[in-house]
Amino acid sequence: MGLGYDAHVRVVIDHVAGARRGQRQEFPAGARVRFGRHPECEVSFDPHRDIDASSRHAELRPIDSGWVLVDSGSSNGTYVEGHRITEALVARDAPIAIEFGPGGPRIRLFVGDDAAIEALPPAPVEARKPPWVIYGLLGSIAVVLILVLAVARC
Image 1 (cartoon, rainbow, N blue to C red):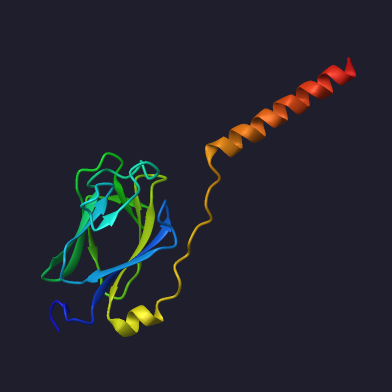
Image 2 (tube, rainbow, N blue to C red):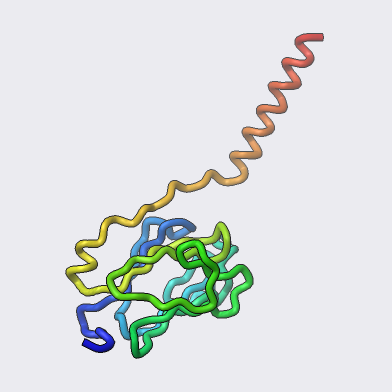
């Protein structure tokens, strides 16, 4: 079947963690897909909350044998299945986990036809992490309670 870039083959991006978590994007399999915080990227991360991702972080490119994910010289690296890569081949009908910088936005990338996409189980969307303000508030309350208990014992 060669490249497999027929009209029914698509690139599916499921946002697992980051500001866009829970969202899905789809693209034609024969098109280049750019990832980063820059608004011109097809998969554009939040420029204020997804700071571990570079402006132009990585790119999925169609090649003769399928697809390749290429890191675009990002500051924090691109990780496929937990391993830092400069380039990684992407196979059809095989979901892969990608992270854009340690602790950065994470996606599940899948390339397949309509039937394979339909059979794909839901992406494992991570719970939102509470903002640092909540941690700071909880820490302040704990300090106040400790001080109150210390003064009460005196």
